[in-house]
Image (tube, rainbow, N blue to C red):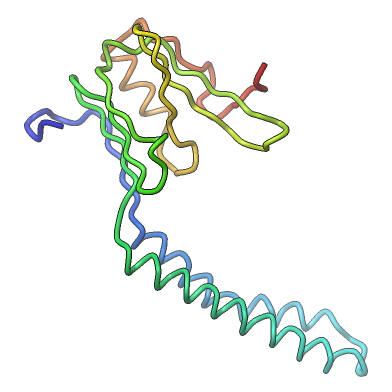
Length: 169
């Protein structure tokens, strides 16, 4: 992408940001487990439950620490960029969510849900018949993205509600 083209929409989420969330969860987990322990009033069951919670807590903390270490040692980021000449998405793990298209070539963006797979899909269809998938898994502002796309190409068919995913037919 040309660095001189002004961006109309930009979103980036790094693994470092994800690691920060994991580390915050590590700090909160002991509190949650302690609150759970406070629900047990039986003096006989409480010590057994406490030792079970301790084992679960230690295993979960070690697992979360391993995830945070992996995220920090494998830097990458998910990004969406929109300029007047290019709409691109980059996902560090899934190549199916990586694409670059001219916004003028986009015909429609559709949302759908696969009930059996319990998955949401965002598909971008172009005039040439290509279909690209955009990741629905990050907290980017779809309403702002669609508004910027509509500004560039008013002919794009957009979902009526950016947060609603209808059932796949």
